[in-house]
Length: 355
Image (cartoon, rainbow, N blue to C red; front, top):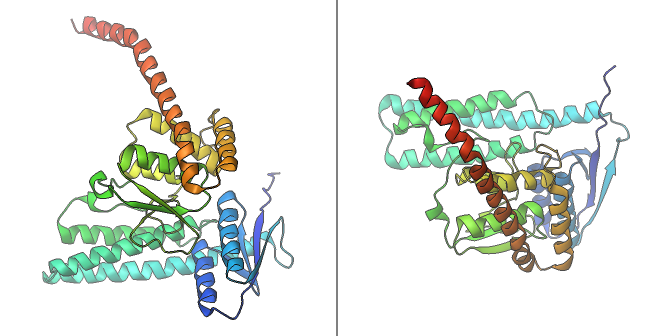
């Protein structure tokens, strides 16, 4: 008989003060963004993993700093509800979000189709539709990120996005490089990301630290980093490794992998190797089984204990990633040198066969 994996849960129990009233709205919106569902009055639940635990911890801190009360519990079961019942609730909520997203996408597709049919699409209107599709894509990315149990409405919404995308491409008369399917790659221009303010969450660890190194070394020549609490203003900044951030987790990728793909840096072998290490440490799914992961994790955690200031921590962790990059670069060059005679010999054999 096939064994069943036991589901672990995170419960956030909170009590908000009557004032400020904006806190209640802000907390509710944050819970919606995180994909949490209510199971009792003022009790919200998420499946347990490192990311959801960190998200709830940030929200707990925000509630307490505003004068409220919040407690976080990890549980193997929830009284009065089975795992199957809770999972069904998650799927139901995601399906409601998928349904709204599908409706919005279908409406936009219809509007575009009508304009194309009547040849009445002005440049201003086209720009407006591009912006709208961009917002809908971001919302779909958010839903996909919190669709922990693969709700049935996922496929229909992705198909609606594809139809809308194709209709927009038809309207623009350009190729498919203008947009991307959620979780696929889009390349961004480095020129547009110079001298920018890069915003992420406070108390950075492996993914955010690696992203800061990548940004500083390969993307922005003069970056400025800012560290904020969840829900704080990120306007006019480039948000990364944050909910609704421009560069954050996508599909199975951590934020470091997302940045590499978005800026077309996959052709650099040392960066790919570092990405595998960061992924294994951050997501703990042993996808790449990098033997260096535990050592790098220990070093970064140790530096995080020493350097509590976020900017100072980033500065002191830069040499860690510099060293990895040099190490993997040297290995790559050595491997190419060692393989050169074999490749030459193979080429000579092929040439002899052609004679």
